[in-house]
Amino acid sequence: MGYSFIMATRRERLEEHDNDYGFDPREVLDHGTQLAYSPSVSVVIPYFETGKVFEAVLVSLRAAIDRYGGDVEVIVVDDGSVKRPLVDYMKAGGTWLKPIFLPENMGRTEARNRGMRATTNDIVLFLDSDILIDDLLIFNHVRLQAEALSRGRRAIVVSFFEFTDKNDSRIFEEGEVGANLRLNDFRLDCTYGATWIGCEDDKRFIGQHIKLVEETNQFRSWRGKYKAWMLPNMVLGGAFSVWRDEILAIGGFDARFKGYGFTETSAVTRLVAERANVVIPCVAGGGLHIDDEAVNVSRTEKDKIFKEKHAFYNNVFLMEEV
Image (cartoon, rainbow, N blue to C red):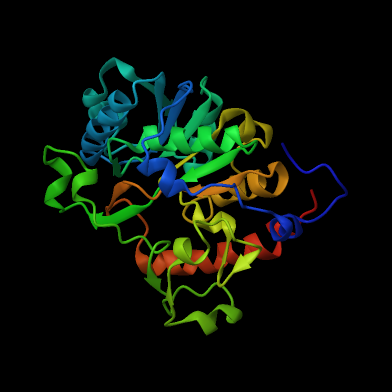
């Protein structure tokens, strides 16, 4: 399903997009909906110098795969790691991991695209290598995908996180991740920060208390730009799922977005603007997102890069005709 009329810019497509997918995702998750069939799932994980945390990630992933019970393949793309190569930390994955090794660091965009092209299953779940997921995450994503499909819509399902650091004692504790999550995800509840502005117009939101999921009726009433964000900005790279044939149809992630910032947004924008995919929040469970400053970009550098990427995304990418 996609748009088939006259040429328009991606921004114009986003502004006319109807994201009302026709149901309350909380009810689908609360009622424990049974699946008429179990779509196969491919998990794609870009890996770069993550190290020991990845062992805990695999433990949580294995629990989610077992809880789902359907056909799941896991493709991990080592993006040229040198200090902490994937081979040193994949023992917890056993034989069920399908590793891909890139000869040099090519960036998360290329790593995701390599993994995506190697998938064989119905749904692709993109997961980062520093996120421990709750054991129902795969099952919940599939339930929401199936519900949207039954209503004639292809979807992008997105999970939410508790952000923490590598010193968190829960990382290597036994037990379900979901039972201990304290979500502090900006998409659920935030006060707009002074360093968040991508353009001058965004300054008016500084200090505002915003609950994006709640205020937009689970994203169903989202039209065009809501406050400082476009709908694709609601999909962070850590954990989101799409239909494989849909993301292959748009060619995956745009190589012009490299490094930190907007790397997943390019694909999500095209899925919404060119394929009429809807964005659905998975408000149950989520993931423990572990920040490691030794690997990740510092907050100051992130703020600088964000402004640059924001300008390119809005002034170039969204203005291209499709």
